[in-house]
Length: 475
Length: 48
Image (cartoon, rainbow over all chains, first blue to last red; front, side, top):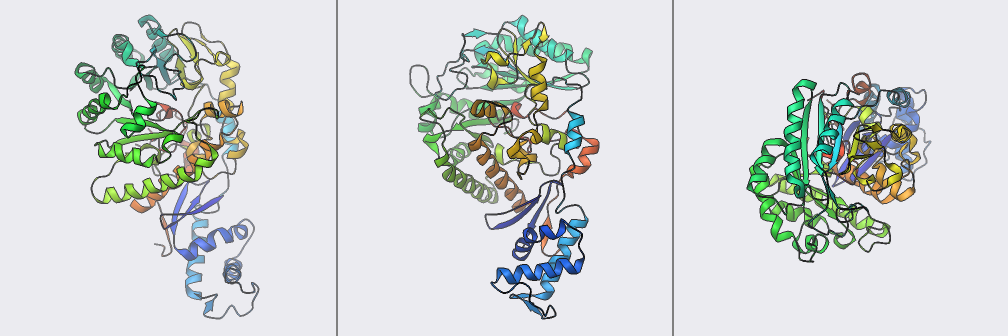
C-alpha cells in the first residue's frame, strides 16, 4: 500500500508496509500511484514504461494507447526523463521500498499469545484537584467517585505488583497522576524512595514521571523532581484567556499567572529537556496553533497540545465541522516551526515528533499503547483499570493491587485489540504511526475498543502527514 | 543515487519483525499524551 500526499510544496510517497518514505519530483508523484496496479501483477520493464506513457497521455487528455513510443516526447515530457523515473520506481520496488505488501498479520497473531507482563503504571495518587478544569475527564479529580488520596501502603503494593508482574522487563514506568499528584506529595516522595530501594534486588529500573497543574510547585518539590523524575508533564493550555477559560481555580479565577513563572523555572532547571508543557485545545480555540506558538514564545522548547476528547453534548467539544480549520492549523503550525528553526528559535511539538530511523518495532506499532495489558492505572484505593481514562467505569475494573488481576477476560480483550481488529485501520496509511488510536476514545465514542473515534482519527492522520513533511524538509 | 526520488532514512519494519517485540520501549501515554495514542514517535530501546 502506498500513500501519496503534498504538504507545504513537498511531494511525499509513503510505502506503508515497509515504512519507506520518499520525497519525489512532480513526474514521479504523478506516476507512482498510477503505476501501482502494474506492480501488483507480473510485469516487465517494458510494460511499466508503456504503462507510464499511457498514464501521461491520459493525464494530458490524449488517447492513451497511441503508437509511436519512439517519439522523443510523450505528453510534453522528455522520454529520457520518463525512462529515468520509471527506472528509479522499479529500483525502489526491487529494494522492497515501494508497493510492498502486508506480511505482519500472522506475526501479530503469535505475538498476542505471548505472556502478558505489566511494565507501566499510572498511579492516581490523588483523586482531588485544586483546579476545576472544565474538560477534565477526571471530573475535577474525582473520576465520578469520591475524593481520595492514595496511602503509602497502597502505593507500595502497587509498586510490588508492578515488579512481580513485569517478567523480564528491566525498565518500569510509574507516572504520578491525579487529580493533582502534588496534593499528595509526601506519598509521592515516599514511593520514589521505596521504588529505588527495591530496584537492585529485583533487577529493575524505575522511570518515574509526574503530571501536574503546577499550583503547588515550589523549589523543594522542583529539586526533587529534577533528581528523580525522568519526565515531568506541566499542564497549561496556551494563551492566558484560553487557559483561564478552561483551567480556572474552583473559585473561578484563572490559573495562568500562577503557573507560567513556575513552569518556566521547571523548564530552565531541566535544561529544556525531559519535560513537556501539555495543553488541551477545544472548540473554543480552534486556532490552537496560536497557543502552541504562545508557549514557544514563553520560552518552552518541549510542547504538547492535544485535542479535547468530550461528549458531543459539551459546548467545548470538537465537532466534524471544526476539522478543516483544525487540519489547516496543523499545516500552519508546521510551516511556522520550519521558519522558527531556520531562525534558531526551534521547538519540539510532541505530535509532530516522529522517529523514522529509530522508532518502534512493528509489534509495538501494531499493538498500540499497551492499555489493559502492559499499562494499567491504579486508583487511590488500589483498584486496577486498563488506563487512566477508564478509571471510574467499574465494568472495566480489572482487580486490585493486593489480589492482582481477577478479570483476565478484560485483559485478553485488550491484548487482542490491534490494527487488524479495527476495520477502518486495515487500509489506513497511518496505522503504523497511531497503532489504531486510543482504545479509551474508541470505547467512549463507539462502545467498543475496536471502534473508530472519527474526529481523533482524522486529526491523527493530519498530524502524521505534517510530521513526515517536517522530516522530509529537514532530512 | 536517484535523481527523481529522495528516500528518507527509515527503519525497515520488516526487519523489525525478526528482532522486535522486546517491550522495553516507553509506554506511549507516559510521555505527553494522555488522550490520544501516539506510537510512531516513541524510540526503540534496542536501536538507541
